[in-house]
Length: 599
Image (cartoon, rainbow, N blue to C red):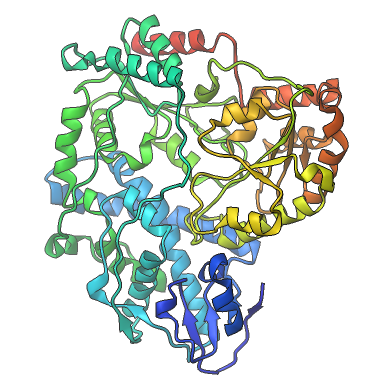
């Protein structure tokens, strides 16, 4: 990557996004980040010889310091937002209520705004004479809800709006242009189409549990986005005689209201500012708070009352705490009136990563939090090691040398920073590691590699990068469910701490892992379990070592995988991070019965 960071005073033009309409190519170009340079547009931007500015997060200690600052800022800001929000809606809800409802948006918003501010501040500190083109104020929009906010972050136009607002409120006066900042949902060209058995099970669960139109679901445990399979949800429903109640209604969309500036003015200057950024934040918040928390609040409250029972015993969810606004309002209101909130992890790096804001949020808002086997270390946290809901009822796959192919599962992340401490520079490094891995694979094995990309490319154009560099590689399709692809390969390879590597290890599928341990910093209590995988030759710290392992073991994967040392390391790891049981459905049934019976 071509970077610079000196005090040259030339009249550089700063490109803040990949929107080329906003670039002045008559001046020397500086790119605020790698996100400005789309792979498919390389033929356009490469001859311009623009330079990419060094990220303020290139220094790891500074990055971790920023993470802790944002965590502290979140805790300072949430209580001061409570009173004006209660006043706007004529209610008297607790800080916990607003943490459940508003907290997920703040988890994303604060690091995003801080990152955009720090990147601009770094650029103008080093190049005070910089010029740029900003988005005209008449083009600015307010997101409907948390979902739309995150979807907008995936796109250049809304990031241009954020940069433009920060520059305007910081006193800069630059040329303006209008541009449509329309919400654009992330759509993949591939769709995960379930088989007829899955569709039938979903239909049956829907019919059985849909009787809450005439059979009262109050005092039951309500499941919403639980990650239990349709078959397991049906078993739980039947085994508890309907006391476990899966809710399958669609996510309630937030209507697009018109922002109400006089009402929003009550959110201005709430935080006692301790620095320049917090002064800026006090002015940005009234503009950026999504409509669902102000103008659309009553509408969503009415939708929640129509969609959910009024007096649940408990509410259980894995993933609905973030983007389902009606659910969040209902869950928060129910908790205010005595319902217990039960959470369970839904990703592969819980209990492992040293910095995990999502995990912290879920543990904080719930009364009991179920993990996939690991024990929390926070004092007072009600963390319960249990069985992974996502893995319940699955059968092991084991090594099978009669199968062919290497399934390589990759991931994606937004081109613009979404959450600290994960940066776009980290993902750029991640893509380089993939190239290094493929370069070290024996040529005859390259044709055996089948790559499964993340369903959402998010603008990285990863598949095209692979096609350009390695046309012989096969691309897996999302029309084939992951478990089917996993079952039909001989060897599974993964280069990130996602969920799929836990699914593979728990299924006893031969697995080779690699990722950058500097970027993926582990917490001390998790380190010994990953060290066991490393000592067993399953986990590797660089792509060349992982490729060499693939080259050596592929011809006789079963003998390598079934080695007692390797199997012991796998079993110990899974018991702590991907716990399963042949009796998991009954274990969950008994646990839910205990909650219903107040024990």
